[in-house]
Image (tube, rainbow, N blue to C red; front, side):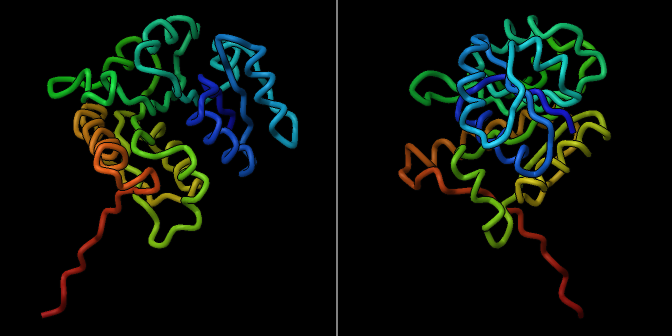
Length: 213
């Protein structure tokens, strides 16, 4: 798959490295193309870099790995998004981990869908530490990755990418259910940092099998 990653922070970089090693085509986009080019030097093989708009044009899948405060402006700079799949990994968290800035009657993912005209948004990967992502393949049992979205094909692609990382992917239904998933991301932040459990934690959905009578 051709993946344009919007953002060169820890989350975007970690995802790009994992998927690149799994044979995917990766393009890192940054507001500062020089910063993206320096990032490319950390890879063993050539990685394509450029502006946010360049990455958007390249990718059949676009990963939004930027701060919530920059989301609307960045999306407006991406050009024509018709038919693009957008994977939203953003947590709309208040300063000092003070809770969610948006929720209950809508979600950050739904806001992104309203700004990204013609795109197919999938909420995913909002409850993990960047360094943990590289360890997922070694975890037993597999951690759960919860996703939501309105387009079946887009969710299928997101599922494939999640499985490449090593997750068991759980389809949580339509995009409006990001209103449920984004608080899960906030719960992860609360447990990892405010409650001192550390960033190496993840959630796991256990499947109950009915015992024979």
